[in-house]
Length: 331
Ligand code: SF4
Image 1 (tube, rainbow, N blue to C red):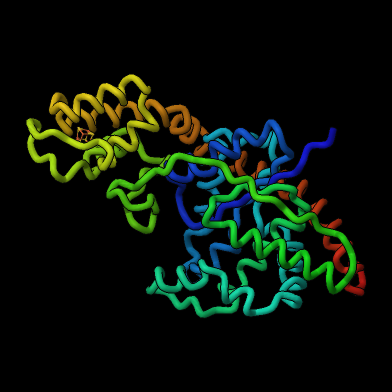
Image 2: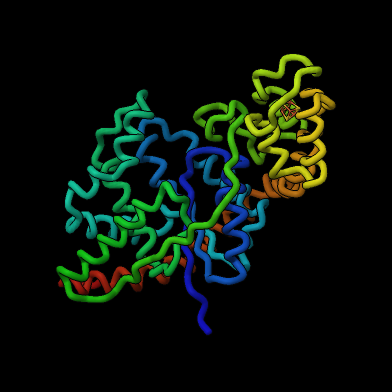
């Protein structure tokens, strides 16, 4: 039986952190065995917010590809490609933008949220408003059945589905598949300061961090603020360190830490050292693989070229169908 197709991507906007690993990569890795997976690095999307400062985009593409491979995304199983190597995404974006009403984009919740969040750049651009249309093109050009998303991205996927319905309403041709969301429960991982882990908050642990850096960062983590001395009884439920223990430490250790903390039997310094050890054990295989792949830029380039070639064959075919449906000459 033919496998259903999954598509997902990540913006080329920086190194990947533990939040990306748990929130996306671990999930992507599992999907590879069940679905035909297409994973792409969205370098054009990075331009939607970083159009003035583009000097890091190429490095980000390389580093993200390295992070993916080190985390277990396998080019033998999945098609790994670069958005800008497939110009058909841009053409489909243009064609879809002709039929997408502007109010649909203006009501996109992340449009306003990001404008409020990112104050140091002018985001009143056409590209920023229209990036969900590019996102729709990215997905539907591969006729993906499923898109793994977080709950906060469901509105984007719904917009993609609305654009498909509008295309059908206008041109009466069923070309695209309405993709469904693959929403899975992932443990919420806070940053070092207990806010959401994000590179822009400076509170992230990166997959490329050395073991020493991981240990140093763990030492700075926010604990139970009421626990000043070791003799104070702590509350692990409000402690960032314990949230990490629950995910990265063996269950028995986490339970011992819980007891130790609530009976003042363990100090925060020791608790953090245990976490640093467990965390480093957890990411060690990724870190080692990363180190090896970082010295092989030709291999990374080859994987992206090969994947992009494979993806482009499908993208070209879909675009021809779209051009025909819209009454255009098929190139
Ligand atoms: S002992 Fe551990 S869990 Fe308890 S407050 Fe300190 S760091 Fe947090």
